[in-house]
Length: 488
Image (cartoon, rainbow, N blue to C red; front, side, top):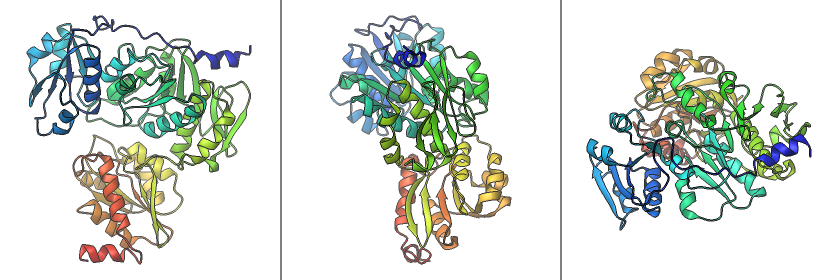
């Protein structure tokens, strides 16, 4: 058998998930006192899984009952103790196991004291891993995680019919265990927050798409953020695969500590083993020979960062044994996810594009790189400790007008506002109206905020929906319909 065939078949081996021993606690949950900290989506799933395994569950959250009404309603009728509105340190000390939601800082004083007391602290992703006897493809990165995870799942379904797709994307990994649908494989989006608390989590194939500054309101430094991302490779061995972006500035340092089989992808150069671009073609040499997968202009997803996402997905699925010829129809058909460079409408020759998921500067850089037409950029929101100066060159080159919203608008204006015509808007709807008045045929109106949404919206999805609703109220002739409704 060829060496390439041996490598491909390695991914068919299922890791035996070990009991939770690194934290000093055995794997039998029956009768154990489990404390779930944070009742977000993954917290609800963790509660259900713990109860199924026979644990005695307490939920604690600093939010009150009214704010958590929706989550509590999903757990109605189950035997759960609640401590809401504040935390009780004594409950942390009395627990046999603590499971935290991703939004809970792992440096919380309650968690640090519980660890000092000898109580294991893990995340929902770790809990699910120990009960999910499947090959896992884990995908992380600052930008593109959801798109790459979804595309990988779609590609893998061509080869393995019953594939779970979730994790930080939509459906918690615990739900895969609870559903018990005889999955053939799992593809999971994994955030840096989830990776902070892993102990044994070991994806068969781990993908790191990219790293750019983000969440610096949570991390003390970029080094700490990079550490969290790189943990996805921490427990891998020589029979596993690590897929990384050869064009990313942090890759050369990260691979020094990786023990698994390294596969690279690149838009800018050929790679010794992996997937790369050559003359407009996506080429894979993972099998030991150069094979054209698809032309870049045939990809259903657009933008330079989506070419990278596609290459990472191709590598992950090929390493799972899927023949390349199965992939092309899916790659042509898959057009991406809502709120990720989503074309909303073309009005009077002006393209309105929703990139509400562009919540950090790196994402906006990638988005702007993909446009050759003049851009009116709508940005701003809740600052996450980001540095907006990396946008300078692209703003000079591509952005004809900058419309700023939210709490960060003054900070963004100070950093890059002097490089182009800059306008403050009172709301996102106001920004869309201003853009429609100022845009000319051939322009792109792009919502790509470089910020979180929580100062004005519940989440980036709501922000994207509001943008689309405002765009859909425009009726042409420079947004005439919107001006009438706005009383202009």
